[in-house]
Length: 308
Ligand SMILES: [Zn+2]
Image (cartoon, rainbow, N blue to C red):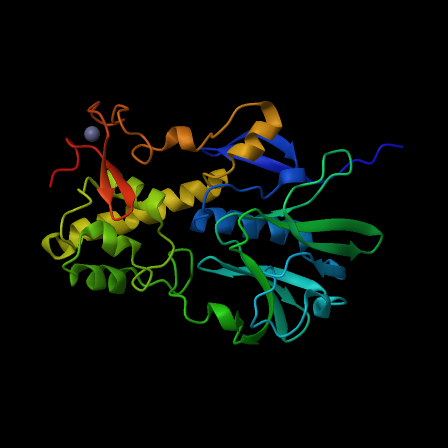
């Protein structure tokens, strides 16, 4: 009898169901995961692990366990997963005990539900056996570059130790839009640095900074304090909007999974207007998107729509 994985990943673009994929690479990411990718991973994990008990847990790399972990991964064996939560890029499994299993994906971390009829995923750093009644599910943590980690941590009012210092992001119910705008308006730095500043608003990385500046028609090098409150509000709203769209589609970093499904890649990436689009026409005015240096990274913008 052939073993069939009943779990499916439903793939949406602009609100329409465009495909259903087997969940063997459910939360496959490449490129540095930004907030929408981590939120997508959280939703996938919550959907497919909630209610399961951790029957076995094992790490395979010395760096996979954070040194501050209260115990080895095996110390969560026997715990039942109540939900999966997130703050910033910190993910954690809420357990039926006072400790949580925390994960940070780093540069290349992935959670995978392996399929027996597919090749083993590479770079496996930890493996969990999950069970719920007669159901069995294996969950693997893979990390090629090993900047990600797992740890067992104490909870403080529902937040694990390592996530306590993280500012709220726009998906958090405690997010204060007006306070964020006021804080941005007081800065003299280039607006792109300000929107990337995780102490003011967490969650925006390089891709979503370029996309939201393009949507708000703001040049990345304009000083934040030279922009009006209304203009900064437009930018904050654009950042929220573009990240919410990315969550809806499943993040931008799912090309490898998508290739796995039908040989095509990067559905959301084809809808990026500015990031990575150097030389391509601006979707709004047709002028070529330009790329300029931004620290050791790049900024992409339209020289006609985003005047300095
Ligand atoms: Zn343009």
